[in-house]
Amino acid sequence: MLTHLAAAVAVLGLLTVVPGPDMAVVTRRALAAGSRDALRTVGGIATGLLVWGALTAAGLSAVLTASPAAYLAVRLLGAAYLVFLGAQALRQHRRGAPAPTADPPGPTAASAWRTGLLCNLFNPKIAVFYTGLLPALAPPRLPAAWAMALLVLLHVSLTLVWLGCYVLLISRARHVLERPGVRRTLGRATGVVLIGFGVLVAVAA
Image (cartoon, rainbow, N blue to C red):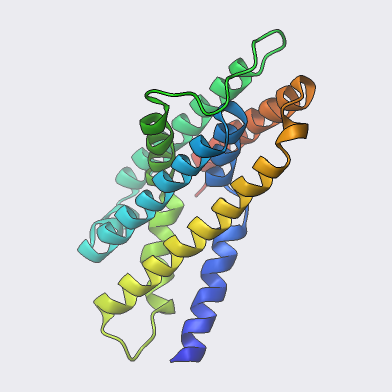
């Protein structure tokens, strides 16, 4: 069982560290509003994973992956949302625009969490992964429900640790990232990456 669990952790870890829309969104929030805002976004992403885990346990994600129309709808919504975030990043970091204030007060906490949540919920590949691969990683000696819950919690934990460390790394480099030219360049690059991920999600089979 330990060997099987170690293999599952390795696969989940690989899925977590491979750059994707979640990391791009966290980068955007970190550049736009600082580390606390980025960490709230990470919390929203983790919440999205928990929601996908619950949907998988209820069998709803299997319905999504089995229905081409439903999968297409989620895919296009996710693509549109990523393109929207990318365009927003490009607009915020256009030449001549004032630098955003780090860690601003007010509604940004809910906005950052919601951004992470929606980015994850509109990622149909998570549904495919949780439905198709996650059951194969489940330790065979555990009841199916307990095994799936364990794997989802492991994935959430790995995501929190990885993206949390990533935010910490950005925070440590803040003295460099706060330079107007660097911030503008990274902001634009993040916007282009988000739009690129949106296009990839839209055309993916």
